Length: 328
Picture 1: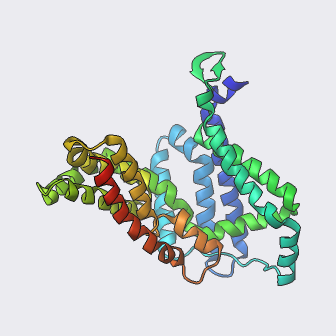
Picture 2 (picture 1 turned 30 degrees about the vertical axis):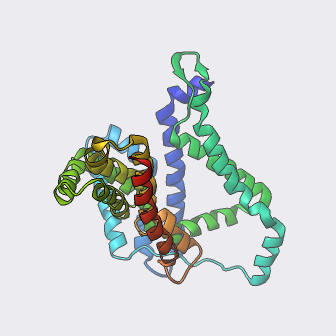
Picture 3 (picture 1 turned 90 degrees about the vertical axis):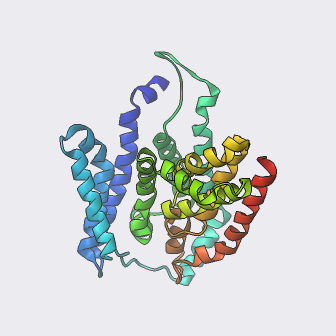
């Protein structure tokens, strides 16, 4: 049974992406009821659903599949730039209905989110239990897509048990949330891919050369500032600390800090958390800063960033100080 998950990893991962694609296509179909940008919104979500559900098939089995996927991505970008993706009009609950639902669910509303996080953490650690496989020397583990799919479905089932919504309400609220997030839902995937491209293109070496020219022989303090600030700025550009980490650590951390005796573990740890300071200050980190503002229907879409800004700036200074104290 366990061998099945390992032997059919690609197929099972595709099921996860197909589920995402189905939700996007459902959202595109629901967009036909929009009053604003109906056509653009429909095209965007249906094309995105096709990419999720069939992108892997196109790339692997169609001769020009990669080009087709690239053209679709460009079209999605054009629709976003042209402001042709709009949230739809949905029935708003009355204050009385909101209070009734709040009394019905209460604090149990947090259970699905907790279950999703805890189950994802536990499932991702299966490899550490070293469960043997019958037909292989490898140990049993689940891919990231499988972990997220199982955790999400488990959370959904629990949410349905707690709230007991109608099927139509579940579908309607799902499409509503995705429409509110809008094109920002694409950013994590695109920025993750951009990080790989930057690393492959040798951007880290280029940044290292520039940093060496600027810092010169100014000493380890200047190098520490360059590394921390570099991680912050590059994360703000990329919207992803993981993507920035490889580029900045190879370009600045290794030649300017580790080569001068800094503890690699401390440099790497503080570099990653310094990147999170950048995450707090950029709209490019859409899933942290833009999505919450959209879901909460905040009037100021940058309100989350403004609230986090003082903390982020203070933490940048703290990171430089900690790097100087702990790494040398």
